[in-house]
Image (cartoon, rainbow over all chains, first blue to last red; front, top):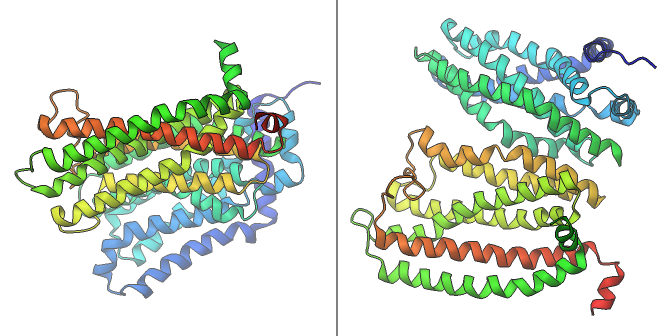
Length: 228
Length: 242
């Protein structure tokens, strides 16, 4: 039997997941709607005054993005593990880390990227100045991508567990807090007219760290979940 | 060496050895902690700025140190268990987690009590406090993940992956006071040049840290024995041992 190249296998996984998502697009849209709803709660709960809202806009956008990504993560591997697809991937002889990374990349395109695209609009509604748009987009791009991989590790660990979704948040949120700190600080600095380069570089550093080591942890976790 | 590891890795042998080791940790720990308590509370001079309030340092700093030390021990044990598939190492990681969580909690509480007279507030959202709180959440997540599996072997291996991933947080906590200028004072003991704390105050601190380390050793011996008992409750060697 001829084995396909790694890149071809990863591309297959990616397009398969995109197709699946396209057929159930209402499920894919849920985290995005959640994101919009949560950000709407803050003006209602605190104050509708834009000058006040502006102060917390960066934090609100980031917290909402974090929660919304978490919401989408739970189902990341579940159906594949349940119907045996994941077992076949483990046995396929392809490097599992690459396949999982392709799956996570697809997941990010479906859930992370829409958040990034819509966030400037929500940010404007919260009083975010136009000058901070660039920083918000860059920080959320890096942040949601890192979160997808981190969350992939958590989802792989909890895939066979009862009440997995609560546990998943408990595992991923502590690991994601540095992202939240640097991300919202970058946005706040940009709004105040400072250069947000420092926190953004730290975010990029975390992103590359997680991108390089994350697939290893993910494949180890999936093997544990599938084997037994 | 491999022979020794396999011998020690066998539950009956480890159970006996840990039972013999425990008093060698326990009694010196008690002695050192009592000595350091007397030294720190009575003999050490009061701080010229903080007065007597600084004395909580003798509980706060060792427990903060132990919170990180225990996490590293736990992660290393989990790594050994995952790589060489040694069940005893997994049991050690499981035994260490609640101890680490307790030390972390103690560090947070004593820090909070210390912060009230010094900073005028129980809690500030600065880097060191927040990252120590993160460490507590990591311990709790680890224990929650371990508890949610029915199969102990799966619980071992899944929580080992989490412990190793979370080890990234330890250097963040340790260097948080260096990287961000915050309200929490900078490291005053673990610096490479001369420590910025007076020697008469430092000696009891070191005795206390040594005492805490030994106390940890005693606890891990006891808890690991209990963990072995729990895991091997159906094994035949237990009946023979009694």
